[in-house]
Image (tube, rainbow, N blue to C red; front, side, top):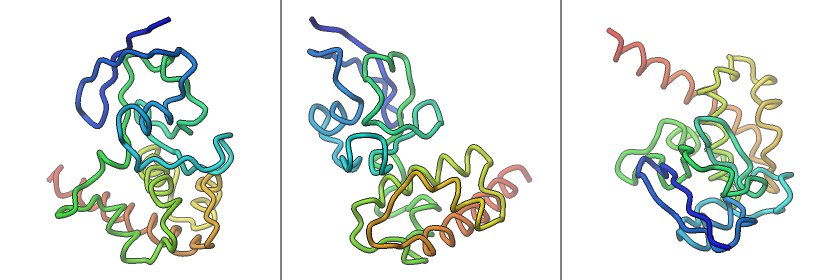
Length: 165
């Protein structure tokens, strides 16, 4: 059974024919669309390596059926920043050594972007750690991640104030 869905993927409208209605968003991204920045960690929604933003909210793409996202706006790590112009969250991750092996980094960055957009970060490191607890890091770079989220949030708020002025 074939099923057609329409997505806005990293700002680009896409029509995608699904051969199997049971395919997850993660497998669609990695296997069909060659967007391999989103990582397959546990494939059970427990590690956060596959975090993307769907309609601005953090989603474990390994748990989301692609067929259920018809009409959705999906943002993956490939749609965030560029090599010559990093997103403020990406720049903060670099500045605070918020990664070691890098496997979890795309999911961590997407979760941090979603967290900041959801206005849940605040300026409390403990609150940030709690809100990011769905993203696991085997290397233990949690302190850098927390510092990066705090810095990125300040940078984004300052940029927003400059734009409004």
